[in-house]
Structures are given as C-alpha cells and as structure tokens.
Image (tube, rainbow, N blue to C red; front, side, top):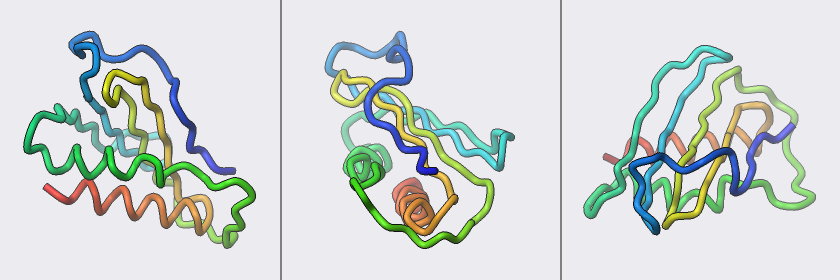
Length: 112
C-alpha cells in the first residue's frame, strides 16, 4: 500500500519561525534508522530546494496503476514545515510507483 501522505504528522520544529521551511529527512532500512538529516533550508541550500520542489510529485495520483514489484524494505520520511505549513511524506519501495518516487527523492538528496 502506498504510504505517502499530505500535510499533518505533528507539530513543526520549535525553532521554526512562522513561514519558515525546515525539514528532517529520515532514511530507514526496514524499521532501522539508517540516517537522519536536518535541512535548514536557508538561501542557497540546493538540497532543500530540490526536496521542496519534489514534494508534490511524491504523493500518489488518484487511481494510479503501479507494477507489483517489491524493491526492498527501505523507506524515507520527510517531516517538518514548508513556508510554515506542516508536511509529512513517506515513500517506500513497495511497488513500481513507490520505487520511482523513492529514486526521485534519493536523487534530490544527492543534489548537494
């Protein structure tokens, strides 16, 4: 099942000013945390800009049809705020659509 969600998922980080963008990216190998990265999202932060631009594409399309292949237990969550609005997105490798979204996010994270 697709695990991407829209806004929600908790309170924004305490250090965020109203209208600020601050993201935390957590990579998992199954249930084990592999890496957590905080993106400050200041001017010139290429990685943050790439991730923010990609967020709408990480959500499933209504009635999308995906190949039923399993790419592994890896998943990535992006939580925090974008221009003051709370964000929580999770991508997995559970099917062809999710694998494509996962690969897009990994590419964006490597932009820096």
